Image: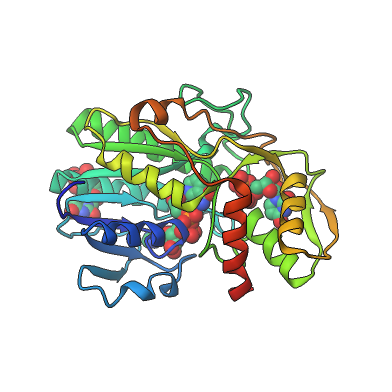
Length: 313
Ligand code: NAD
Ligand code: UDP
Ligand code: UDP
């Protein structure tokens, strides 16, 4: 383990960020959590506020940030299609201007910086499973583009800052991640299905439910992010982090109904524009470089997530 460092987590009050802050504190680091609470909540980190090594700052990464830190995890950006499409211009700005500011900060401090990129850079993929060498199939003008192209441009900025200024970068391409502390009204499929099942409401499958996703439990993902950050300078990515188990949305709905014992019916709603038809990470590179692979099965992870949502739905 690295000795105690000052670590900035942008988007630290969000779903993944709050788990990451907790784990970094457990490792003995000082954590500065920066968030504008667009989709994140103070409540996600309320239990950390008494820790003298934790600091919470309300700040929008679209504005410069001058702080003294050793490392940056750049997670600030809404992740659910419902939220990132609500204010698409702001989403692109956060991805691009936010990245420039955090890279400028990393440059000034000579700090190592990790970018939370996404499987969405592959768009509606024509290669299956997706390897890091695949350049993707993204509609640049569709409703998802603010997120997909914003994240792609952020990757470009990371690699250019690395080449131009020798910044120590890490680019992680995160695949669908779920777990406790997802917002109940987040709009993503796992939180939607579980809340609908617990409330006895119809479970809404968009399209015919044959589209696939691969779901990674948040503890596994955070473990991957931390190992990546601690890895040698030469390992810059991009690196896929996700669980290769692949499920149709119909299979996911059935698993949620089974685990909750719900009497909810499954109903079909229109498929949103540009919704990717299939998605599964090839994680060979993460395994070879970090010895990392997920350990939590979908059944186990969903059971823990259902327990959490029973308290908030
Ligand atoms: P989330 O919406 O719960 O968290 C994002 C956080 O960023 C929130 O706390 C939000 O308030 C904050 N934020 C948004 N815009 C900001 C801004 N301009 N300034 C400061 N803070 C801002 O989402 P998440 O699932 O925790 O995702 C975290 C990161 O991981 C995101 O960058 C997302 O793109 C990436 N990611 C997530 C997934 C997933 O399945 N959860 C998959 C791929 C990539
Ligand atoms: N920046 C920041 N914090 C810092 C250093 C820089 O937010 O500690 C911002 C700064 O406002 C700038 C951006 O990062 O707009 C990019 O910085 P860089 O040094 O690459 O560019 P320049 O300052 O030359 O425009
Ligand atoms: N989805 C669904 N019902 C919902 C929410 C989402 O069938 O209530 C589908 C969505 O159309 C997509 C998949 O589930 O095919 C994953 O959606 P999510 O928004 O969680 O993530 P992303 O599309 O960004 O992978």
